[in-house]
Amino acid sequence: MKNAPKNRVQQSVAAGAVLMMLGVSGCSFTAEQFTATPYAPSDGIVKDVGPVLLRNILVVGRDDETAGRLIGTVFNTSDEPVDLSIRAGGASTSVTIEGQGEFRFEDETADDATLEGLQDVPGSLIDVDFEVEGEDATFQVPVLDGTLEEYREFVPGGYTPRPSEPAATEEAAEGE
Image (tube, rainbow, N blue to C red; front, top):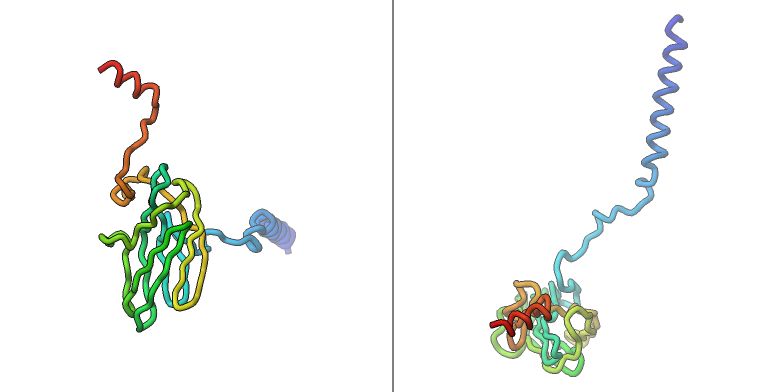
């Protein structure tokens, strides 16, 4: 019985430590874990319209608001071919995706990926309407320019980098 008070003190200290740890870390029991929330680790949108899966869809354009080019991949999860119609601003295009197939806008050499007359500048979001088999959906799609090297080859009309310091560039040109 000589050890009984000592054990009670040790048990009380241990219980206090457990309660303190629960109090300090208690918020993790009720808080949402954002690292467990799925998201699209890309520059474009990830959405579904009917049997069509839109993956990393974005528009690459220029500041002069002349045209934009669609980038990304669309997948058809049905066994039959489907027509995907895309409208943004006053521009539109459509593509046919084979059953269980995919269509990559980056690989397109025809004008199927170009939207003429877009009036949204890079850095903005543009409302884009997607229609498949009578099902319509509108999503806000990012408009990017050629600042990121991986998009430069897709800028309609080519990418021209902006000078980082216009005054310094003009002085250098005058000095030549």
